[in-house]
Figure 1 (cartoon, helix red, strand yellow):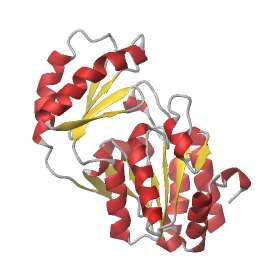
Figure 2 (tube, rainbow, N blue to C red; figure 1 turned 180 degrees about the horizontal axis):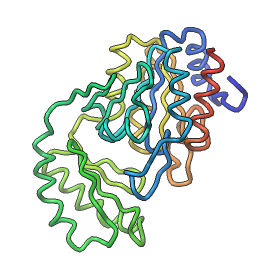
Figure 3 (cartoon, helix red, strand yellow; figure 1 turned 180 degrees about the vertical axis):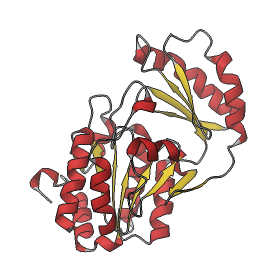
Figure 4 (cartoon, rainbow, N blue to C red; figure 1 turned 60 degrees about the horizontal axis):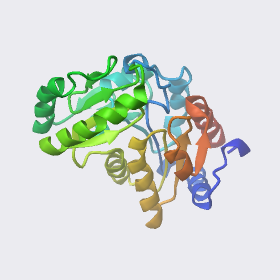
Length: 270
């Protein structure tokens, strides 16, 4: 790997070395929003970096697998990313509740608590600041504050009642980048990533993310390193979230940096 993409930790360097040594045993996992696509006011317009699909088309055949792990419904990730023709790509949407592969989608029915929360949200959000809106993902409900006049204040104001609603409906409240998401318990990117790595019998892993929702995936990589499976964590850096940057083996400059890193990895493997 070029010097600009050298991990700063020995564990990260060992992870990269393992991927380069045996790519057919390696899995690359990627978040979508903020990692492969920019964060924008309307998530429906968060198209992937223009070089994301081309670089994944180069990289995926060189590895055991490339998997995108996202809170989005898989259909949105496929469309916004232009990923329909990336060979062998797997997308785990809704934090692993949905799975897309080669055009086929698998998913369970939504949890009952999501239906209850959906019915109660309009009343709870009555009087919320202008610009606050709800994204219904089917298996989860995301309350966005980015469009409000004071997004941070709206976020802080809404977090306590939404956390109470999560407790009453048996759901989990997951804070993100000016978004508060209600989703089923036990569903996160760490569980989704670990399950996929076990399925593929992976012997090394790289995971890249940008937000608090990616912390469970980072924790999964760190825990697997303790068992002897080399791994590297990559942060798609931003001014909004610093927790991942402090914990990552490698920090790159947003989606531009992620795509450049993936291209450098493809070059090194090719």
